[in-house]
Image (cartoon, rainbow, N blue to C red; front, side, top):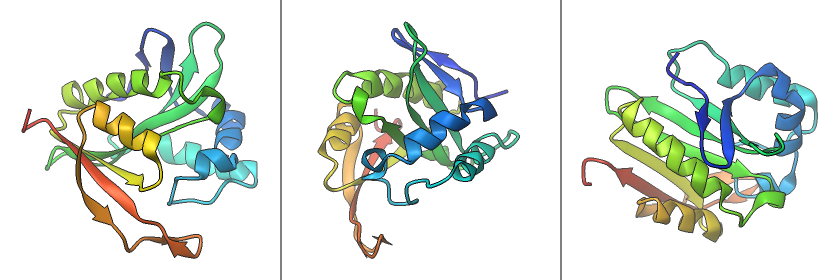
Amino acid sequence: MLFRALETDRMYLKNMKSEDRDFVFTQFSCDEVNRYLFDAESLTDVQGADEIIRFYMRPEPRNHHRWILTRKDDGVKMGTCGFHFWNRTEASCDIGYDLHPDFWGKGYMGEAMKAILLFARNDMKVRRINACIYVGNEKSIKLAERHGFVYKGIMKDEVFRGKKYPHKIFTLDYNAA
């Protein structure tokens, strides 16, 4: 299995499983978590959580994966992170991450990013990672920049929730490093 659980100083990054249903529902039904996501509305029922879990539990090889960030000291699940659109031929993928507001500003996502970026480079053999970040999400933009992502342009035409939803495109290019 390519996608394995990861560990950081304060967290376990666990592969998403069916027993995570309640957490996935709670996480993705939270309007604050979904505020900057442009690909799905907040969940309104647990069947939506089941669909998310099934998507990320498809058999390998797959072009997407999501880990659940779980605090070591008490087992609390705090958010998710992972990859989408993994193109093995081009050695590229997109990154995505979300954190429950109770854990914002405590360095958890930076710690998780470090682990999954290393995984992408060493295990997935990725040479380029893209991040698509809503223009108003300054904390996420700063997080990406701290991890070496470089601003490449803006995606303006995405319409979501009845309005234009502009996103900045950032790229981490290991070939340039």
